[in-house]
Length: 275
Length: 313
Image (cartoon, rainbow over all chains, first blue to last red; front, side):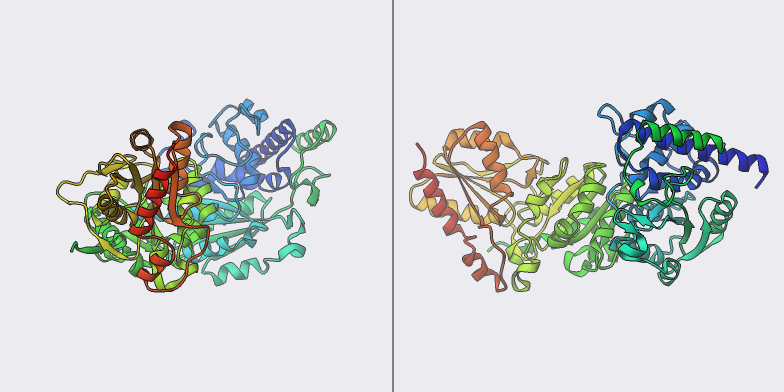
């Protein structure tokens, strides 16, 4: 990747993180940890990978994106706003009663959201349906979905994995945000889904393991996924929950709690300093 | 004697019949031979997708297909469609109001020998509680075919309830007219109204004949669309006959009886008595003794009608 492009994407990822913090702080609720862990992947998806049109959100041939781990909607909203689907000023209305930015993604209310999600385990299956629709209609668009590591404890994730493999959905790309933490503790302590890569391979996926904060690795993984035929691809992205904010990184407590004013200011300073 | 056809059979036939004129796909969860979607599969194999024994995934796959512009029928037994996959239907189909038709077969006690785990008596209650969900429960093969056509013409989530048992075809295919959300007055009457749905409609007609022999004039209304309910025909019947009996192959809690009682209480309060399973589970057995056991008979409907009349002020 060219250095200018790399720098540009890093800036966008930082802006997504700022958008996440702004929304969660303004709402005084939400899920900053898992939103920050996917910020780099979201930056690459919306500013490099996805063929979407901000001025035509329902364009029939667009690539589809399903945030199966719907509680990290703040990262999706920030990416959509930066991409121009709606004004960035909307981000501060997250979770407010007069806003279209619901606590979890709502495809009916928010431009650019392809599927309503939030109940864990459901989004991946809906992405399978979209990928199947493309196959039936002979269309070239691809479908991407981000699933959490904790979310992978849901049985339906493996029903969907079976389905994607059975119907050879090579136009489907699963991204697992492996940040290692869930509400009750570490994923390893609560209900360990490892070896995640081996399991997905056994289910028939082409599996690529990467550092989910390294944009060049992210770029290479998505490029490789497009070359895989006859089977779906899973990108297992090792990430750090709360990435970019020192006191949130790898802390279970920041899964679903919002920063106070002081913490918010400190977090913003850290993100901006890294830009 | 009228020809007997299961509404599930009519469902499968209708999917195959309309497959040429309408662009849709069909999903099933390893029950195609029983839900009769196999009839569609045979004719349009490229538009049929078996999801295996994974109903939750199937409903969400259906949602994804619909979100990408593909109308879809997703089929399983009522127990595993409305029951197992309730939350998937609620969150992935209902909430985004997607164009998914849930073709649920083997509803009710007439499943017979398979028994309680497979006799879904709660599906109408579950589906009624989902905002925007349309619920259609056809009474015979003619109505089932018409319901499938109406489903294809309607853009939004719909739950279609079909039975396993072959039941009499009492509607005339040449003159039958189906309008979504509109009840059908099958027989006029002035003393009491029997409001029935699904397989109980034929029994309601028989009950009205038993009542007629006693000099009681019973109106019979077929409610094929349980949601949205045709309040107009119900309230008119309440006002004109002063007493109502509901009949359904479903728990008396949350189904047609509840829907009618709610409408009547809010609109034109008159006595409403409900025939259905009385807050209990099913049982294995041949269908005739099961129907006797659970009071799903013309005789019980007629007895309840007399009781409702006695409650009039």
